[in-house]
Length: 410
Image 1: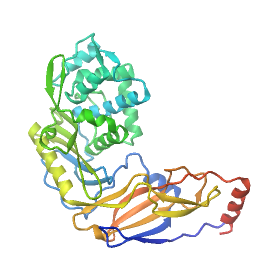
Image 2: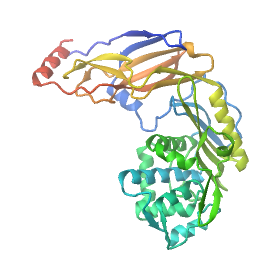
Image 3: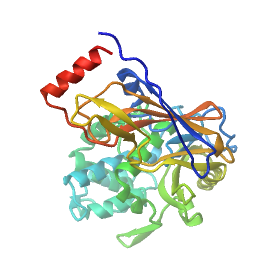
Image 4: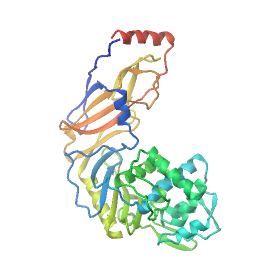
């Protein structure tokens, strides 16, 4: 049996902001496709064609574009850092996961153990929940997110995991499921502990997964204050009070970590709403973490143009399918295909598509079947998974046998 020859297809289309768009179609091996779909590879890495970011007075930082899944800038993004209360984003992920599965409900009351109460007495971040009381999950979430309450965080961890130790195991398993390599958790609240470590890049992945998987959690992160037990505390994210486009996400501080902030900002553009996420760790003060984060977000919004290449579920091309009840499938993405490029360079965008040929039924809708590659002025810019927009069940035995014969003689 001989291998199927490479197929090449040239497509062209005109977009309002593009002079031309070319699409070349090439096969790609299954191993290549699997490697490209690593759980941690949520963002394309910046290229040398990226504009220079501003100077950021922080130990490490990264700026991500969630709309196009591009990394816009970073420094020391893979350097191990203490995550401080940014840890609570992973705790929140598991709490919202438990709410989604029905293990918890917002109205459910959880007991406040002595351990949770004592953890709240460590440092300045606490929600003033009383030992041996019972507190609604909704209030504990607000205490964890708005007030960064260590006591509320431990109470939630015990409510989800039974014990803090079990919950920490859950956190580390989830980190592995995200494909994180450097992140290890020793507690749910972020107090300094041996082996409690992450990186700016991996913290951005946790934050992104929280936003993507639980978008209904965002109203908690935009709350400016929360009152519990008659004590009103303001959100430490100063950008919520300064920039109306900022709607989250989390502050952190320990002596070892310095002042940290993960901030997210969404603004309308001609290509649709655009959301940026910045991670700034190791700044000198609460004011500095806000200023440096604002600097990054403003630069990210102003230095780039947004180019929408295809709408959600719009076919990029149609491909032959073998051994299926249909002979073709439309290929595209179930989300809009959007890229951001340095301002004024939209006309230099071109794309090429690689397919996992031969495409064999059954195919499910949304199944990855290749990649769409984006170049800017001939240089690699971004790569995104290409999906089947159609479900193609397997053909009967006769159809499968006939296509097997046809494939064998090509």
